[in-house]
Image (tube, helix red, strand yellow):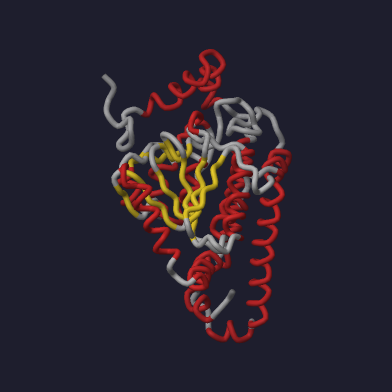
Length: 337
């Protein structure tokens, strides 16, 4: 809602608020409508009580949602995202739940979108020839669009990301959208997909600043938990064995705060960012993603396509990431023997 405080923050004259009182109701209505439509979209995707790819566990006032495909490092697919957002919506509507933890099973939070199969439906690999409009329509008709990140931010319950191990690509984007992010000392963050014609998220620059975001968004380099703390990707770094206990204790603290206080403070930050253009920025982000995935000029990555065709997925990863070793941070920071 547009208020005097927002006008002050935007350095608008107070009279702007007085003259445009009606606008605040319009903006508030638009935001609430978007929130409702978003909720309806995700509710339709899956029966809320039927989860196979995520787990839904309530511990008193705390809900723990776990990405539960450890054999695939919790790689994101449309069915998994459908379940994830349905679970988030179910938790947000349950009055007995006061805070939400989002984490991943096994060796990582998430390895990002599934690129192990050369499929435009599941992976980041786009067809060589596809019109931008067709690609954009396909993107909007799936769950992979800006509504996913806004959905997390617009929930009335706070969402804490508990990151252990790999947090890569699309999984990294989800961690950015959570209200609070706690990492174990073993956490590793990266967007290596930029090395094969892809893009970062505007949320990275928003949270960490232009230069910090560019340092890693332009190289795809991995960075460890301490570097994530330094640049603002995470709030805290804790020992691996204490991660979930620490996050659960924080979630319990949040659960003790009056629910309306939590709700209004989430609204204050999220809706103010939205009023200042966050959704538009995410839409531009998605449109640029469409363009980059629809390019027919793959000369810079022809060697990656060849490696995948001739040697499979492991050969593709070696061709993509091998030339960047050693990296300044991350699990492969030491020179090879």
